[in-house]
Length: 352
Image (cartoon, rainbow, N blue to C red; front, side, top):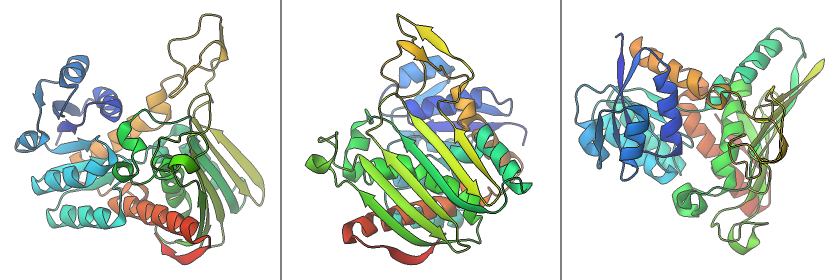
């Protein structure tokens, strides 16, 4: 298969960076987009020929092989199952679902219909994080002992992300899902499960630090211990001002690695008037800033979607970190962190 014809479900932020990534790939044709609003804007911006107010009508097209699921969290389950039952391969944005029960059903339905379910954890493809994996593999920092990883910013504008039920939780499931998924890729690799979790977080509403109107937490941290002994600290919060702050620190017996995914731009800019765009979620751009250079590429979106397209073109199974199984493990871990926080105790088990 030389070209893959793609249908996008959704029309806002995630759909936009999927379109950006596909537009750079000679093996992709964006055939259609289905969404309840914003269809004219996204189709015009990316020159998408066909639009559908009901995505189910788009799924009936036999000429579309791959579906990008770019809708709010609570809709992932229904859209993935509808796409699988229509015989389409599926890329699902994070988190895979709002519950482990839904995620398991999604995996089962995709397997039954013999379609690929690919979990869009972009950190697995971020060039900086791929480079540090090479450094670790060559033994430069010795045995990995401890990892700290976080995604934080000052809050979402999406009403669905603010609602605990439609999001599946708060900042932890919405943001910490990235470091959790990346650490499963980096440390678990399918044979080194998480065996212990401890979670601590706010409980939403009036108990939040800042975002009292959010149903879910605006701050959360979790500690994981892996079977081989490594510890990891993950964080997802909505209390960090100044733009999205994604960082990873890796401590080994013979060295340390520190990675700044979002503030690592080689550009330093001083502006009295302010810059139109610096990085995602920045609300103030006056003074000294570090404007991003090809943010979608450096966060991993472009190589991620290119890889998924090749999985369809060449009939390859996605590697563990971006498989449906890894997406399920992320949700199971998030649920364990929430349970640990509620019970105020560390939980033991096996999560992979």
